[in-house]
Image 1 (spheres, rainbow, N blue to C red):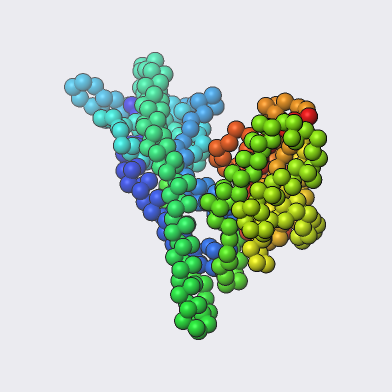
Image 2: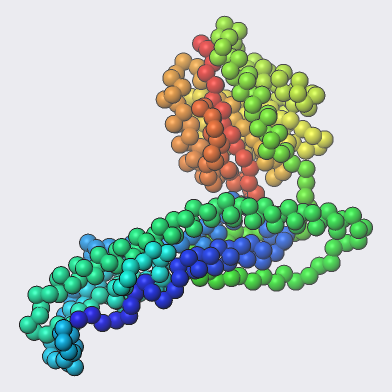
Length: 401
């Protein structure tokens, strides 16, 4: 016979997932305004995904152990039940990874009867008590019960997969909505002509229904009141990059015109196009912070775009180019690019090296989707401020020999 509690029957898993999603939105809403505006957005999203992603337990069947002990057992027959007789208990210990509380959750799909067991720490225990003449049934009972446990976990995994897939976009949209509201409120306060009253920061944190404490820490946000600044919109950033890509395509289509150009001459081709669109606001070899950067577009006193032009000479050269670009980048510079010129090598063999080198850089936080055959996009941490991020797009061009 079996003992222990009924598994996969206590809580509605879909309701738990909905509550967990709600808890994530509550955490975003409860984050103090200046901290949210100052903190690293991608780091905050990563934290929220770690905190509110639901991990259904995975059984480690290769590490199952069994123990036995003497005790009284109940015997069920077709006609009647014998109260208790002497027998033996067999306890199967199944290690697992994941959230133990989920063994009490019922998936949207479930069977007519549920398995029985006990969760103790990171082990699931399935126990069977049999009289001395019924020991041959234990292995079959355990195999059947284990199969039912695995089936229930698969049903739960399907529900959790939908929840987890929706988290990134839901978190990003909720953060953006909150940021826009905060910025609108700041502008409204500024228009009133009176200073903003200071108050103590009161923060609350909701406890997720089916999530333990996250392994990564919540990213810090600045305590200094946030002041919005003009920034280059992503649509304009994409327009600048498209202009550069057009110059690169012209090089590939007219090899004789660009065959003998060096790095400085190639950079000039890009500056001509940029100045045609931005009314002379693009410049080359301009001092900015730690040195002179190849291409800068300025709006008043603010740099809205910074780029470096380099010939490809291996992964170490690209790492140095990224370091150089970051050294030129002030705290306020958030849209950047590296233009890589390839001459005399197969570009198809170089592209994977470009991607991997950038991803492995110590300040790279993550790679972003970027629809380009010869381009890549990343989010980088500012070297001097872990709460500040910049976007780096790398474009590779084939330059004729």
